[in-house]
Image (cartoon, rainbow, N blue to C red; front, side, top):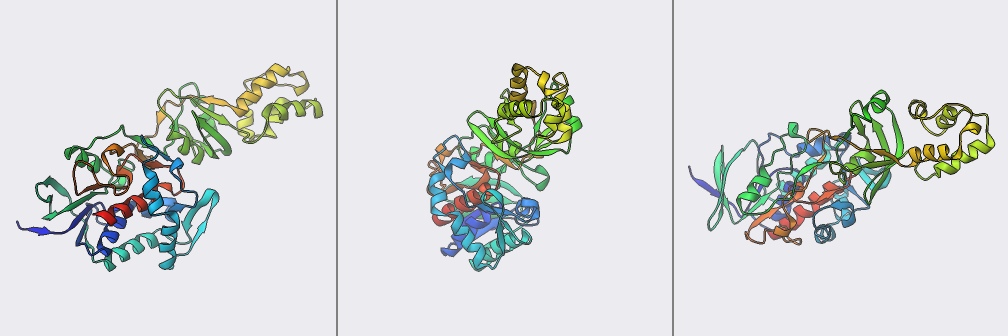
Length: 392
């Protein structure tokens, strides 16, 4: 079987891969973009409820998890959220900003995929879908064997993402390939994922399934003020997905059910102003009824005037720092991203090229850089893909 030669082969037609291929093609490189799926950008299509939360106006290196917190700084500054917003605008895609700087398409996420495919097409990128890679090698060039042909190139870009959402075709391909070329991996685990409750907490949480409320979730130095959702298995919602990336087995998560309020002060005021009010009723004025009823069972019910201040202090602590010790997470099936990946020590922060393997690049979710919820991971895909595309 003959081998077809290119300048750059990009494996993975997702966000980072399409961006990288388009940029390399714009520089006059002969680019091959491969994917085992029959459709490009499948994770883009399901993101943001089908509207693609494609970036965040608050993008900053501090909003990413990594073994090296400074690694993302160069790429994020070289290709910014404003740069991608400009690309979206040039393609006439209407968008809007939701809470916390999150930018979404007004219409379908398909507009973003169509935009990236149009950029690739205009740059002369050869896109081949339904190609399963069966072998990789390197001598004077990189060789890529697939079930539908053999290819060679001076540069190889690994852009196949992480392990999250396996039903969308996610695999550990990029991690395995990087290791084959001698690059190190950090520990990988599910990120932006619902947390499962311990046997101690589940009896209280399960009857609350479907109930949502604003909270501040804290784990270590990390704190996120957004909505939380009780599920039949534990906790979900944006605040929990966010804090899950900081959580490790054995850690405690503290939940502030009255974010921004002085819980003890509120209860003391109720005791002074409404001494005959039942504690359960007071709690129901602060929290959703079902949650108030569930928490009220922890203390003797009766007029708040009869509740000692030390007990009010206990109630206040439960409201402002409710300790939860999750038993685990819902795993990669429900995780939006993969934490960890190719060790940043192995890569140039400016180009994403492997220091020990000239011509090899790793971009996007496969790298040990994981953003907060809210468009940050897409921005990392655009930025890292752009950097590799400028260098490959």
